[in-house]
Image (tube, rainbow, N blue to C red; front, side, top):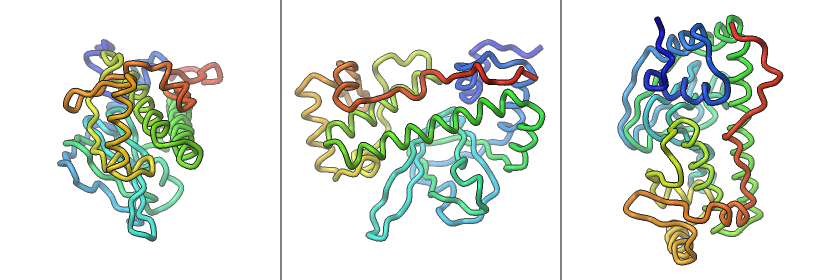
Length: 250
């Protein structure tokens, strides 16, 4: 019998189960798309912008990001990916990828063809609704961050990014409260929020001096979450989604 205990769930199952209690059949459907295993080292490129692709990727372990190259040669990080994410959804409408996906840490991914997603949608309508909702959450969260680039200062941009990471990890890592290991370099942070590495370094130090955060090595602790929320007008898009419109479970 399938054990539905959280200790047996993959990160994707944990994430989806945060919003609805998955049925045994839905759990098994997720297991089927996660059967493969591919390992990537930090800095490895999973897929490059413009390459042909008909696949999606489940992040089983690790951090990654999606980025585009600007005409100036600079990099713009669009999305951060964590365990429990499905990557490649922004390219699902085309036959080539819209962004370069790069491993930030050592990663384990499961890849599956888009046709498998179509079969899952036909057979498990509630999972289809849940996937649609979580894909929408990711798009809105990205829009929130990109909107802040032209309307807020550096501290607000970084605060928004840190709060977004925290809210995301709270869904798939129940033990996360206010502290997490920040696995991004300061260059990564700068490319995500439109700042130089020097500006990022200076701003993080200022946030520490103000008592907003504490850093010990790579571990970052949010000390004044409410103040940071007010600073950047952050909205938690990941904590919950409306499920009252979902169809019945298969």
